[in-house]
Length: 395
Image 1 (cartoon, rainbow, N blue to C red):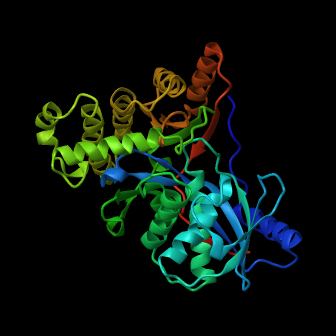
Image 2 (tube, rainbow, N blue to C red; image 1 turned 120 degrees about the vertical axis):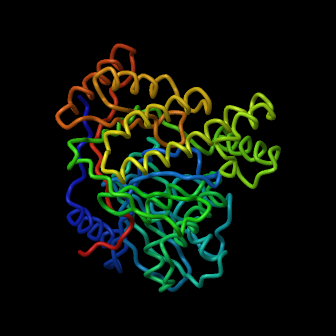
């Protein structure tokens, strides 16, 4: 089984990031911050419909060593990049001016300035263990690392949800991805050993739901199909536009306002191409509520059928799955996993599989063998535990 190595000690990584910063910029950083990637247990494509989601943060993080500047310049470097330092002027930041990975951190400064916060420049060095293109919110981790660092560097005193909104604004308005707020809320506000029950209409009312995987004899595998996705390519925006059109036709502020009992009537009233989108959103919101209830009862194993039902809805109604993610789900279930589903925006990325302790290798082997038989590259597999959200690290 091609299992991805677990993250090394975070404080060792932080010390290495601080050393790299000194070599790059000739001075020590003011601090090192971490922001995690995330997996979403259930509640996919619901956040931009003002709905509900249940994400958890991953141990994999983007580290940011940062130092404030007084001359209005922004310099960015990534340990995963091409070695070059990108040099920008904060006052010149505007959508379309910056492209590639640097648009995500630069967009945070643009969003903060647009919200009226007095900020300046900085030297930034990133080092990330969040896989890119795997549906694990590597972009949100970049944004949220910058947001929490700037909150301290410039004494902004923003709340977690306020920082998440700034990061979302950066991705929507600067990087051009019309995502909801779930990824950024998960990266900023999650806590260890819990999942985040998010109401996207009212992020401030989020709450932590205990998610005791290990204590209940369970494990969560994250299986990266290695099929990369690009949510800025238009498909994501088209789905969101379809949902907004359906809500308007139904006379609703958002699809979250359609009660499940009224779903059959609504489906009959909608154009054929919009009905499946609405069915997914309404039933997915209900699955989030059911999952929260099961976790609060201490029955994490009951998540299995909920996950599998969510995948079927994403595959058949929302149509954002792909042959590789479908194959992972099929192979995991065949090997005895209680449940599995695609996670993230879709069009590739990762699958989560809930497995009984001791069955990780059997499930991973089943998936890997199925991929080999189909001629696919071996997937990357890691075990996930609910981790803490964005924070400053002590060197």
